[in-house]
Amino acid sequence: MTTEPARWLWLLFPAAAMSLGWGLRGFIGGGEMGAMIPGALVALSLCLLLRRNAPDDVAMIAAIGAIGVAFGGQETYGQT
Image 1 (cartoon, rainbow, N blue to C red):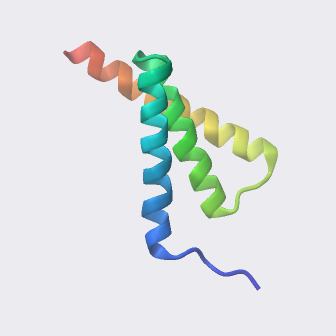
Image 2 (image 1 turned 45 degrees about the horizontal axis):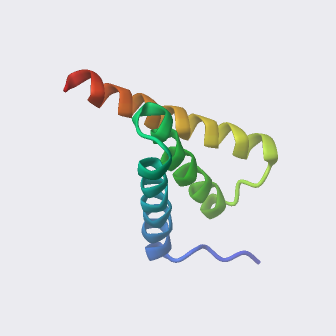
């Protein structure tokens, strides 16, 4: 028997991962390469909540999350 995570956990856990990743982005380095850190952390937190634990799936989801946030970071630098 598996239980679903609480609804508040779906908001709080990825938000905490994003804030930690954003702090690491500012400390390690900015730009699109630094933006990959919070993207990967949010993707990994969603993998935990969705119980996706196959190593290939987790690696692909983390890579897509990191690249997606990096493209978003590049878009904002390109506009301003």
